[in-house]
Length: 275
Length: 267
Image 1 (cartoon, each protein chain N blue to C red):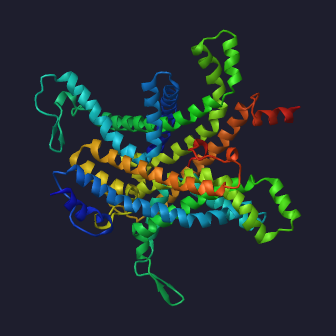
Image 2 (cartoon, helix red, strand yellow):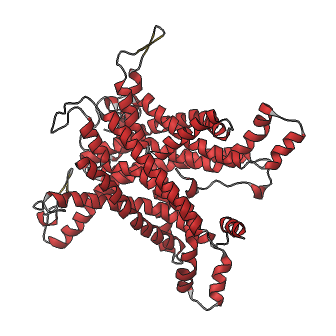
Image 3 (cartoon, rainbow over the protein chains, first blue to last red):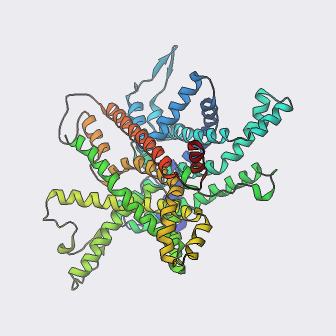
């Protein structure tokens, strides 16, 4: 079978198109690359969507934690503490078991039956966990940035009579983003790495539609040779990491465009703010 | 009973892995600072590759890879006159004497060997993170300190071990304490490495029937996992408190913002 044929059969295998059966024996290098690459679709899906949705919740959580009202502050603090203090792996297990226990037929709310079945599927259930997880981690990052917004900026805003929502939108928020961005890039990288855990915790790969690591593990189990499949996954993830750094670097340049060249914060992996 | 013992397994893993990973990290950091180019490349590649790839990939990879590497080395040493190829299709065949652990050895050796592989894997992965932290910490030590050491006539090695290494810890501490948190949160992955840890037992005991028994209770896995959640929350919370104390202790008398604040508070 030629490599073009393999690409046609397996390039979209992880989302259910193409050949139904996975290759069983005599794996070629091409099959490794195509199938594992196909699994990367899921990693990108989980990472990108969780990051996007988590961004908004994270800002809300950060503002909540900075609030002076204890009814707002305490829940935000507990949210951050629980999701940052426990392993993601346990969170996945817990969420899955909790979703499985929901009644299969759905829940009656005000006469409307809410379907709950889809929650046990990886595409929704794992996404929810990743979304909450990244919101907690980035919430902490944004909170730290919010605390380090220069006092002078706020006083200048006061002097110009900018208050309330417009002060937040035009002064606080842009500065907070600018300060938090290098750390947030780190968080994004590690979130993408965390997506590899999805199919290794409880969530089953329905019809063998898994992520990159799921397929790599499939190959490694069959051939008992870890030296082919895992380096390929590693290569894919390094490329993904470089893409994330590039995209976030562009945003970083835009956020810092008003500053003189030497004051701009460079993006590099900083171990003390790693998750 | 085994469930409670598995908590000890996790703690033992943490206690053993942390120093070994630190050692790996020190080695990696020294390698990245080396004047000899290939060693520096090795150090840089080690740290950057491990950081660029999800740790779970390494956990899955190293457990098999290390096992096969050890068996291959023993095979070369113990059975030099073996002619058949080692990889036969999808089988990895070594002679019976080279098997690790020997098929005749008792069960506990098998378990210990699995645990040993897990520790080594954790040490390799977290060693790379630690190397990165220590490398940054070494660069953060003020240059003047090293120059003073040279002025006192210390050679490179003496200046490194007597001046740089003792001073770098305070700069390394934020990174290392974060690393400790990550290490704690990575321990449930032991389950994937085939060690019977708390996640394994929570699944076994919580399920309404396991491979061996049928339990009279319904599916309790949710409650077991909530228990684990609290265990980990407690562990991270205690570590946070202890590490905060340690930071205060270490910044005492240092030329940093923290040290300066302490001096002012005392005066």
